[in-house]
Image (tube, rainbow, N blue to C red; front, top):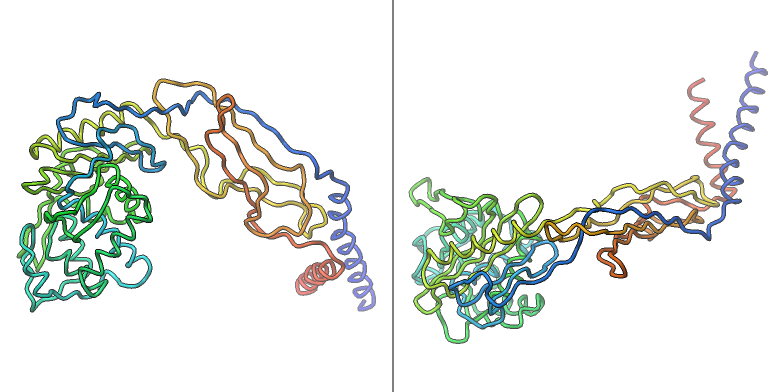
Length: 412
């Protein structure tokens, strides 16, 4: 009986060895020089033009409407005129704070002290004093909701050691983002000669904050809250948070010289917009004209999501690999900004090899999906390998056989 069992195991081993070699033999004969071409017509278009010449009849001195995902400008009025930003300056301050949090340099629970310099800022504030400490979380809430100058300076000093060094970091970040109309002189926005930016640059830094640090909306969507165990009440200076559907933020600003400014963000049906208003004559006008920009955007455009990160396209046969195929997936999310009502033909072309030879590494480029209209390429989505496929060798064949055999023996 024991002898019969040994013979049986040997027979099983031979079968496993032959089974392991079969995929190698079959795949080896597959041609890897061809491409699979697949065309699908979709009733969409990607012709997006920018509205200019103040066709919306804005009273404000400057304005920009930008689509958040792509950065496409949908409307502009004096977009590069250098103007005083007032407290919209704090968008950059908040951006640097969020970068410090996300990098691990600071945490939301860290305690932040108030210096005499921070306490003496004036303007919008929560009246910090030098004997108390607030957490980064509380500081952010005060900055985003009530535009607290004292908290902004306290955070600047906490991060960089001084407001001056923090302002240097603000200007460096502005340069990295291509904010060519901008020079920051302080971190809070109180009027200072030479402290200027443009509606286009405000849209750029607002987009960076909202796309890279979307968790900031935890603070920018607060309408009413409090600090210090309810003793300090907070009401958002951005009235759109309360009365505009889909509003996600972002920041108001006003002084006697800057007049009334606003960076307003909103999302509806997968379309995210940034509306910037500068030098509005009064606060009612800045909110009304921001609404007008946002309404124009939502009524005119839509964002079409074509691909999602990790989406499987197909299984591609693998030659000379320990696996007979590899899963081809989309590398990153992909979509196109479309103008409503202009549903022209978009051609989707999938370009992938009929087969591929091992070894294959995880994330390896395999092909792409090209979305085009006529001769114009609108979007290219990269297709990559989901997992590694090692090259077939006698050693890893034996390893596979041993693993299967060992598993089988344990079950007998």
